[in-house]
Length: 422
Picture (cartoon, rainbow, N blue to C red):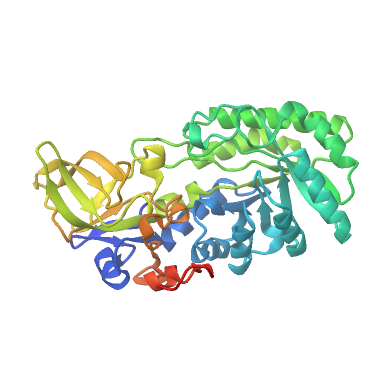
């Protein structure tokens, strides 16, 4: 299912032409589809129907408050990795008890904020963090419900920069040390360590890594219970991939069957934390061609979006399908072009020798699969304003994050007293 399709020769988001949104919002801009957010969440809910599984949206994929609120309206909780994400989730209407606070480097201030907000579960990733949380909870006279994140040493088979479940990764506690850490947690005040969490990586396209990790996790539950620990919740993380080019990710029913076969027999409450799989295909980045530059060996489409707006191609060599917003005729000849941005970096490239119909200055194009790790990773490099974001619902669309003006950007900076005003 896709909500991005051509109608009368114009690429639309649901029933809203991207040309009309570009006129209202300016370019570049991100556009998200309510229908696709709902369809993605519904697919997870259907796959786990009849099971006690809580779906917590991993906000690091896209923390736009309107997106979070939309998913919360469908029934999703939130998985957050910073105080900022926690505050966004709360302001979007996610109940504190339906929030999981993850992250390898939570500061004491962030842990205190989570305790004060009554966050439902804190995933602890190191002994120093465990001890800091204990001190903060004891000082408040509260008990923190935690899961200890273990590193199962499973190769996710994904890009090296987004794998998180190997011994050499910074995340979690080595699974061989888990028993020792649980014993330590049992002796600390203000701590109720009743859960285990894992997350082995992002953009997984095979089930075997999940099978291996889940099997190790179920074995750990049995071992810890044998040592007298109460383990009643398992946080399986996320990681399911989407199709950007020719990937064939596992089906949700097949993934759910793994959970039924391996995790359900533990009798634990189960949590999953999809991010990309919920929002990735629900968004596009729309950009306008500034120039068509013809060189001796290359044709360049220089567009007004840049690597600061969508970092994935530069950071991960990631593929995003590129579509002209105005549909070309079936017999239109294509040409190999490099689609590049205006930033002074050779890495500011979205596609190399991509076959596209001939496009000229002023034409619009859309990069698909941009709903995850797009706007959320954007920066103001080259003093470029952050990209606005638009949410579509049927024929209606609304600006849900505005583009800051240059004056607004400059007001964030303050001159020191020893520099004279210009």
